[in-house]
Length: 283
Image (tube, rainbow, N blue to C red; front, side, top):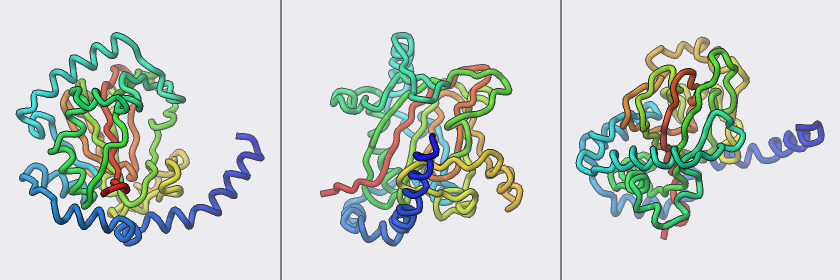
């Protein structure tokens, strides 16, 4: 970024930051989405024990982990997803913008095709049990914004992490939710998703390397800042969630909290990501 662009960007930040900070306030969001909230309270479905447990963990920690066999025990959707992902990976992989360590087999325009919603990927992301959890976390109706599938390509050991391999917070107002699904076994050498539990907005560590841009952009703290703040404020080791797991692991997460992932060193990580946010166009 040249100096002129840099200074223009800084001026934009100074002008817009109070606006986005105001919009991120939960009371402001409750007022702006009062119709959605009212409809949800009137029509919401009761959740079962597993769904309630996931929602409680989301509210407390910003993250909850389960397995597709527990979440959707009779759907029969996982094997078709594995088969379809293998076919797509063998056929073609698209570069994921500037993220040279990621290759996509499902791109963001996947859901633009109506038939994609009937695919195994669409069935999973839009399943009423999944949507029920996300809606309960928002306490209002949400919508699926995009669904992508990517393969994290191993990088040389010792290579400096870049882009989303580094700690960051995603943009959003109030709350957002992503649902990650591992399509292969993921260990510490496979680029596991990593999250600081309790760092979501309103969480116990929500002020650690706090968000700067809210709804307008992701925030990447300077290198070492998150680690130093974790040490400074005494975050217990159990709150640093390195999400290893077998194929079929499902991770519900508010990615406005601090997270990173995709730093694979020996094995590829195959994963889908479904992104949900509150539905502002509720009728």
